[in-house]
Length: 213
Image (cartoon, rainbow, N blue to C red; front, top):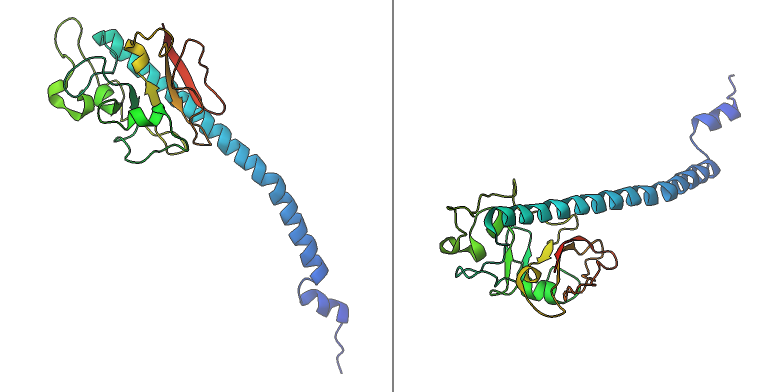
């Protein structure tokens, strides 16, 4: 009569409860180390992309000014120096895309004061009006498109916004810095829309100062 080897039988029967607990503990430990590292890499990548896109959008506006002698602030009636905030994305949002309320979003979403960047930098239709187009003849003319594609949303799915009012407003203290911004990871616009000569890009906002009076 054959007798089984109990030790071998236990090995063939699978892991013991203690072994399973040890393996799970190791997996959880490794996950606890890896997840913050991966999350940090993703956030760094998103911030890097936002910084690159802010520079790209700023460069396109400055290229337009070099050609035209005007900044992207024309309204749908063809009047220069009327639009206050322009933003990226295919259309002006109908709901506030940011976590707080300020003139960054209220002017951007206002039919008189806001517009999308694409209407000035890609298709030459300020506020969607082809009849209001910038000049395409003469010494100073619109030679766009100034972006290879439409102005993108930031890595967190929200618009970049630019205070173009600072290009043309002659207020004594406000609107002296042209600032282009992403609200950053937290989605809150922390930079003051007053854009004074001392306004800095605040908290986790990501942006750049295009010019200053």
